[in-house]
Length: 464
RNA sequence: GUCCCCAUCGUCUAGCCUGGUCCAGGACACUACCCUUUCACGGUAAGAACCGGGGUUCGAAUCCCCGUGGGGACGCCA
Image 1 (cartoon, rainbow, N blue to C red):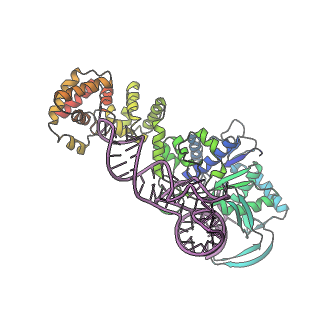
Image 2: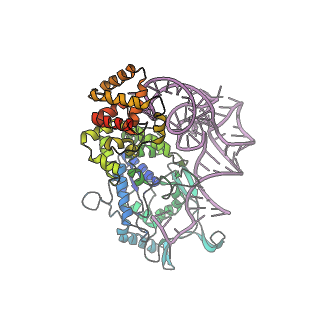
Image 3: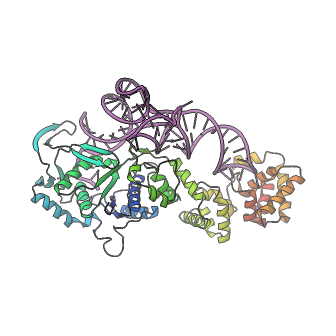
């Protein structure tokens, strides 16, 4: 097959959401799989609703997800590729030229100040009950689409439609087709919501005397709760939200590609190279998929767990840096490098997401940490906790803090000496030192916190 | 209302094209147990689905039809 050229063509009229991201991802994967070209084209013909902020959000989100584009805005030095410009707002001359061809060939006409595409066939007027108006129907044969995912789809498109608005701005259907022709796009991979537009597009291709590219309409992502497809307003829909919450882009990408595609068999968690190798259009499902944030969270945890320590530390630092207004984050960032790294080493195997980090690690960075009242009540109700705390204070004074095993030995010896279990000391020590009953191993906590702070906190609780 | 698409556990899905190997496999979630120095991770186990009805066939989750359900589109939005 000739060189594959696919495009992702978002319009900067709102936040960048999960559905768009997955469409971009499938296009990108197909390009990478086939060794083709991935084009980013900005469909900013709706002057009313476009915004530069949303445009930047598209760039940022794609970059964050790792979906680099070969042609498009921000690529290289001059023009971003051989078929630019890649923003439709800058391609007016090209559209005029194509519209003129239609006008000259009798395939378009002017009415009410707008330009309409003309269907070829017998015409008659009918009253449309649903739209409450009289419309002109044209007797045309059905458009046949050989969709790469859905198979053969037939649809009758029997009304002329506007291609240039009365204010002179071209309409989506026109620019979309013109650009796909001009940019030599070979495969149109887009959401199924465009399937019913496709009949218009095929007519336009035919009007321009061009064979349409291959179509592949991918299933939609349905909102997690309630009916309908996911939209920008739905819970968990925004890419920037995951970015802000410290999700790993590779986890999100892996999760997203599993929504509506599968590599066959039981494989789920896969490195991106493997996904690229396996991805192909026949593996894409035909049915819509419901978004599941639990599974995404699980995927994220799996990726977090296997992240090299250096990268985990970097991610954690990033996360804290983005919450600089929080006292915990400020304290964490102010901590010495070695301590920060040590705390992260204890946390990485335990947390499910970076979001947990502030609450999970606060006591390492400040003495002013929260104490869970329920845990306190429970722990302090058993036996003589204050006695154990005093014994711990004494033991800590001479304990070897150089390694977890040394600390463990010392605590075990203490428990044995008093005829109690390790857990009896562990629970009060944990409460004193961290204010809660969840966290890394007690020995790790002791070691990283250091003798002085551990002793002070044990004394504080013993004397309370 | 019209047109188009879709239909396997609660969710994502394997199997469907090339009917028998499927009293339907995996993952997430849920439950129980194990591991354990708390909490997680991990391990084991359990429950949980072929939308309904017709047909074709010796045989249907798999093929066909109808129904129902879900989704989408019907803009001088994209």
